[in-house]
Amino acid sequence: MTSEIPSIADLHALGAAQQPAYPDAEAVQAAVDKLRTKPPLVFAGECDDLTGRIAAVTRGEAFILQGGDCAETLAGVTADNVRAKLRVLLQMAVVLTYAASVPVVKIGRLAGQYAKPRSNDSETREGVTLPAYRGDAVNGYDFTPESRVPDPQRLVDVYNASAATLNLVRAFVTGGYADLRQVHTWNQDFVKGSPFAAKYEALAGEIDRAMAFMQAIGVADPDEFHRVDFHSSHEALILEYEHALTRIDSRTQQPYDVSGHFVWIGERTRQIDGAHVELLSRIKNPIGVKLGPSTSPDDAISLAAKLNPTNEPGRLTFITRFGASRIREGLPPIIEKVTAEGLQVAWITDPMHGNTFEAPSGYKTRNFDDVLDEVQGFFDVHRALGTWPGGLHVELTGDNVTECLGGGEMLTDADLAHRYESVCDPRLNRVQSLEMAFLVADMLRKA
Image: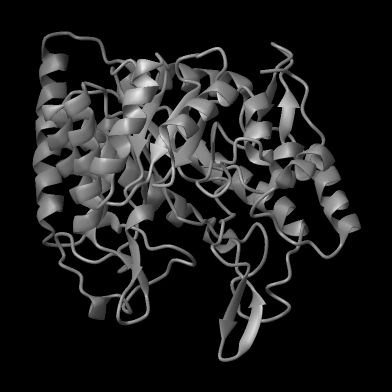
């Protein structure tokens, strides 16, 4: 890695996939200039801390829980919404930590996840064709010509929304909401009668008794009981935004992307000679790369060489997204070659993106059983190879939406219309997320 960051023009010259077609270059420059004057959203030292935590995952000593919305919306930046997402992630982390006895690195898919790659540049409805919705960072969801025009001012709006989200998260995790003694409170407004709410409450009772025992024998009340370390992440998709928020750290004179602690390259933008790999190869943040079924073992080796030439533990995470039907066949050759090369990589599974389909009702959905099967396949492969299944990356919400089929609530196609609220891909709801945590905790215990 070098501290020299290529210019935006040089990056675009490499071939920049999935970028907005902005109609006004001067407006783009004005938005970028404004972003360059904004304070960092995160700090370099926080990024370094996360790198150290992911290094523990690389060594098989910890597990990553990464989750949040498929695509955040500017309208969704409310205290209730942020608290609901944080709450379900805290509940999942407690289940994984206590039930599987492994430290959990908590990373939110939030405070920056406003842009989405799309399979098609345009969308047609009833004979009308407009640009595809690419997330609130780019254009509006409403299917009108005015809404769908890419607007660079939205990048500034995203910065402001991300700052507000991070302020809320920091207030919650340091102000008492994340205190382990609140473990029952996180469950109070759960769906009545949910079997997983009851299971969680039983686990919370065990935690209470363990804490009371420690207090009774005079064990000090550690700071870790009262707060949690929580980091932000998003796909580094819109080059103008990430470039404008890449700054030189005054301590080390090294560049960091201060838009988030952890940023990743998507399956559609991981071209080894492309703009996204080039930009992220220059920053010091911990970074991830999504690997789908088209990935060859040599692709993974080339990406590691480009993105982590010094083979630093914690620097690089491979996020696999094969689909339940392909994970057991497609993943082993990649892990085997990466391991044989001695590369320091954390492996986590994204069981969502490879299992999406259109239901008969027309809604884009996922089946909970398929999602779970891909996670199980991920664990099976790592167990067979003697490597560490390092984490779980899921699209979820703290609300009781009806977007994914199945799970303990046994949601059907007919249920999808009740509360389908995602503007892009379907998310696990709160009950399904907690169910997933208990099932993954069982897998972790065996691992």
